[in-house]
Length: 219
Ligand SMILES: O=C(O)[C@@H](CO)OP(=O)(O)O
Image 1 (spheres, rainbow, N blue to C red):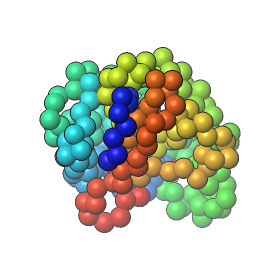
Image 2 (cartoon, helix red, strand yellow):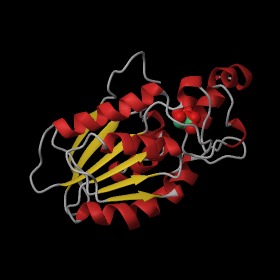
Image 3 (tube, rainbow, N blue to C red):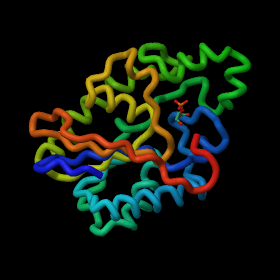
Image 4 (cartoon, protein in one colour):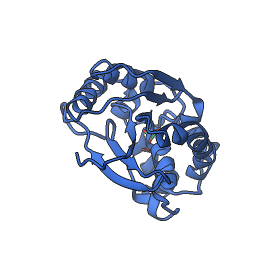
């Protein structure tokens, strides 16, 4: 990984494969745990961070078990135990409302590819009784600005383990992406982005770290 001197490290990581990912269901606020593959991914990510000389003062997770478990397993591989773990429901996956628990392929057959794509990836359209990405931005970004960014700007390496749509919301804040640009941004399970920020929170360095290959494809 490229080093930017005098930088402030912020790493975003999506949790490892969950039971919901493996079953290809809309998961949202359902508290489904990691699969054995997801557990292996978490260990492999931790080993990769260690090899790259990354360690963390602060680790942020959501209130859902799949992020906590990913953080716990990867931290066991690091050179240094993180000082703090913060748990916040502000970092929970989007509420998928009435879609939660439904198979994504069956949803496409029932409502059509385009409707399902809009529910999953548009900025402003919410799934029935659920949250749009705009709703997620409204709860995630204030938490990021108040609780996470100040630590990063103090030079304290910080890891956020969260969910696909939460990481998309954070990407909008960090990269300044608009509603159209964010439609095509995706994070696979166990995929990370390492940011090195300048003192004014602009991006000094950025590297996507592909998920470790464990066995089979990552959804
Ligand atoms: O089901 C979910 O909660 C999310 C993340 O797994 O799915 P999607 O990528 O469709 O937004």
